[in-house]
Structures are given as C-alpha cells and as structure tokens.
Amino acid sequence: MELKVVNGEEPPRHVKPPADPSQWAHRELRAGEFWQRIPAFADVSEEQFLDHKWQMKHTITKVEKLLGALKGIVSEAFIKDAEEGFRIAPMAVRVSPYMLSLINWDDPYGDPIRRQFIPVLSTRLPDHPRLTLDSLGEQGDAPVPGLTHRYPDKALFLALDTCPVYCRFCTRSYAVGPDQENVEKISLKAKGKRWDVIFDYIKTRPELEDIVISGGDSWNLRAAQVELLGNRLLEIPHIRRMRFASKGPAVMPQKVLTDDAWVDAILGVTQRGRELGKDVMLHTHFNHPNEITEITRRAMQRLFAGGLHIRNQTVLQRDVNDDIATQQLLARRCSYINVHPYYVYQHDLVRGTEELRTRVSTTERLEKHVRGSTAGFNTPAFIVDAPGGGGKRDVHSYEHYNRVTGVSVYTAPAVKPGKFFLYFDPVDLLPEEGQQRWANPDEHQKICDEALEIARAKVAAEAEG
Image (cartoon, rainbow, N blue to C red):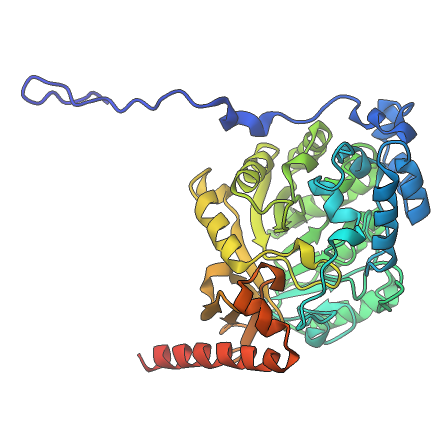
C-alpha cells in the first residue's frame, strides 16, 4: 500500500524501534545435562534421564531420602527446616528427579520451584480462619463418588488419587496421596466398578457435553485406562468434549518421549474424537518459566504433531509467579511450545500454604499488565474459583471487595443463582486494621456479614435497574 502524498509531503512513517533482546527471552530454553549438578545424578546419562521408567523409579517419596539427596549442596539448617515443614504438611512428599534438578540449590529459599514442592517450617503462616479442607466444595457437588457436577454442561471425573509429583498447594489435598499426620484422605482409587457408577450417571444426564478427566493426575493412568476412559466417553452421544488434566508435562515430560504406549493411547483417543466430531484436549499446569525446558519442548511437539492441543492452567503463588515479568514470560514461553495459556487461578484456600497465597488486588494488577503483552488468544484469563462451589469467576467480577479486611464477594448466576461466595486475602498482607480485626475471633462473622450486606445491596439495586 502506497503512502498518499498531501500538499507535496508524505505523512510521517511510524517505524517501530528495534526490539530489546528481552522480547525473545521466552525462546531460550534450558538444555544440556543440567541434572548432573545434583551429586545423586552426577553419573546419570541423557538416555537414562529421558527414560520415564527411570524417572518414576527414582522419584523420591520419603522425606529422609529427599533430604539425603540434598546433603552437601544445601545447609544443615535448610535440611532441618524442610524436615519440620514436611512433618506438618497436608501433602506427602513425591518429587521427580527432573523437578529436583530444576531447583537452584544455591538459593533454595528463594527458588520458585522449591517453594511449590518442598515446604519449610520457617516460612509457614497460620491458615486463614475461614479455611476448610475442601474449600471449593467439590464433594458437595458430587452426585456419585468421584464426579463433581457443578456447571450445567460440564462435569469433573476424578479418575484416581495419585500424581507423578505432589504439589504443596493441591486443592484436592482432601483426597490426593496417602494420609498425613493431620489429614485423613477420602479414597478415589482407579477402579472399574467405581468408574462404572460414574459412566452410568453421565449417560443419564443429556445436558452434559464436557468432561474433565482428572484426579489425581491422568499422567498416572495406564495406556489401557486412557483408552478405556476416552473411548467410553466418546461413545456417549451427548459428550462433545473431554479434557485430560495433568501436571505431567511440567514435572515428567520424559513420559511423552519414551512411553510410546501411553502416547499412542491418548493420540488414538484424540484421533477417534476428531473422526466423531468431538474435541479431546490435554490441560496442563506450568507455574513458572523455569519449568519449561528443551525436554518439555520436544515432548509437547510430539503431542502437537499427533493432533493433541494443550492448554495451561497456572496457579498464582506468592514469590513464585506473582510479578508482571514472570507472568508475561510464562505466557509467551507456553505459547512458544504450542501450549495455550488458558487460566491463571487465584490460589485456593489450601491448608498449610498460606505463605503462597496472594491478594485479589495483586491478581487484578497482573491481569492488566499481561493483557497486551502478547496476542489476545495467548493471554490467560485471571480467575477466582469461588470457595464453596461458586465455580470460576473473573477476578475483577466481584460484587464487593474490601481491601482492608481482604474479603471479596462473588456471585455465580448461571451456576448457583441467588448465592454469594466469599474469597479471603491472606491476613498477613492486609493493612494493620484488617489484621487486627482477624486477630479477634469475635470479629470474623461480622467481617463476612459486612461484606455480604454491601454485595447484596449492590445486586439488588442492579436487579431493580
């Protein structure tokens, strides 16, 4: 297109200045034999490290073994701190060699990956007074054990209760992993009879079109189980979409590179779904750019080439990914490896993880700065999963937010009309006035009632027009 000449002069050309190299930092993926920095893995070859069976066999499931692997690379004070942190944690230890090798052990306290998997007592904060073990109310929306039917056309199929690693912040600490000292879990074993009850329910509900297969983690399903679950769902006429949910690509991408049977199973279900006009996807869980390496890129490319599309759901965590630069880099790095940034979740109220939670106001600020930093379809939505069963709400869609007491009130008209749902900012980040009110148990209900009264008045006024 030629520029028009007006009065003998061309209009000014708006040439964009050269980009700063930081604009393509998302393409710089960690490569090489980085795991050999860990003494326990110093002699591990690339062939061994990329073998998913080796990763599973050497995944650490005992605190003493984990801390033993760290001797000589961290201080004795840190080891003691972590030992005490695990003792009171609601989740058992399960860390893959891959995850262990991505942690910067020169700065274990500051490392964003360590904070997600290895608790320490010294940073532990008291749980919020309004915390409950099943904060999202999933069991209350379960018509049969292991199926949450909250949204009109979607259900959550909890197929199993184990994962390739155990995240500290797991919102299903009420069920995932073995019992802990202070948490007795419900059982969601991968058993055919339990699944049959779930399938029977799904068949009787023609409004259901979308099933999320989670747990636990679908990475831990055997190839035959992936095929069974996927094909039985595809055979139900009204099911149009299914999503296999997994942390696996972030914590054990080696499975995609070397477990051919599992990859063939999920790609086979995907292809059959396409032939039937139904959508099969993988939803995964990268929380920090450091979790994405050259190994990750190779694994995701294999799935992408096979026709499986992947979305990412991040959990916002304090001192892990609650800054603008990290969120921007994470979104662009996910996009670079063909993983679509989908959600950034406000951290749920999970026992033993208060020091990881952030304020709603922090999430609003991040959303404002991430939007526009990359293409709109590669920009995640920043959401709150409303405690008590309200479901996913845009973080800024509250009816009322008191920044002093940290209470935000949400409604979910299409999910549970007429009900109000409260999210609570971490107490230690509130202004002094708010902290003092929460320090007094007599104030707790008053704080909630005040927020609810304002929210109800607003909703009523809007209803009147």
